[in-house]
Amino acid sequence: MIDIGINFTDKAFGKDLSECISAAHAADVTKMIVTGTNIDSSQRAAQLSESHSDSLFSTVGVHPHHAKDWRPNDYETLKNLAKSDKVIAIGEAGLDFNRNFSPRNQQEAVFQFQIHLAIELNLPLFLHERDAHKRQRMILQEYSNDLPKTVIHCFTGDKTALFNYLDLGCHIGITGWVCDERRGKELQTLVKQIPKDRLMIETDGPYLLPRNIKPKPKSRRNEPKYLFHIANTIAQLRGETTEAFILQTTNNTKQFFSI
Image (cartoon, rainbow, N blue to C red; front, side):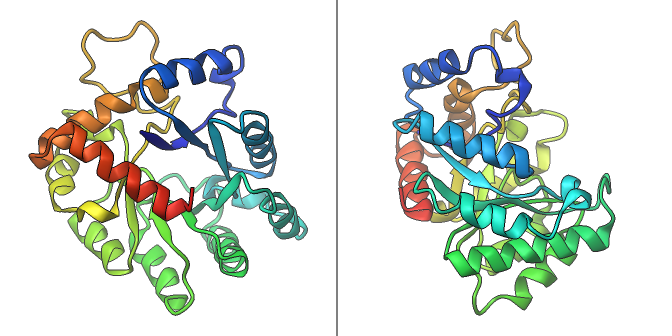
């Protein structure tokens, strides 16, 4: 399995990263993509992917929460980071109108800078979106003729958002949100409707520990070793064998990121 979104630069992994990677391997998670969310974490994500070259890749980008911190030279900084063969996507980019930690106009500007960068470098886009799918869709449509491969990471939207993104050619990343009996009910229905060749899986650790793991882990920290649980849950919802589902999503991921 391949975990397409893991926040290994988070302080939650500061003391035992090597152990987490070993535990992931023991759980048949062979590759993990470390998410860059601002300039500092993108630099550290790229460094981690270089130092753990047998297991890790990374993205580099600026999350909408951090759009307010964007500086004119950040485009070139990300571009230089992306020269590494271990950096395989631009992002986590996009819009978040749920919390609005950055002004919306700045979110949109920084999002478009990163779209331009992905087009220039011909790298996939790794996107965040929350409560902003209409505007995000409009922006993506503006670049429809040049848009590189795009994945909506940690998708938690509704049916309209899902099919809007699918119509744009996007792939969909599913996390342990689908394992939540409270918030994940709609997603549990929607995962059945995602084309099998557009689906990828991720933990988004340390966040979104699957709520239906039994027995419950002592720690609330999510990590790649729990990816099988997410895959198994989605496979059951789709009426597929877990083995076939894992094979399909792993192949999807390899083709999407060219790894």
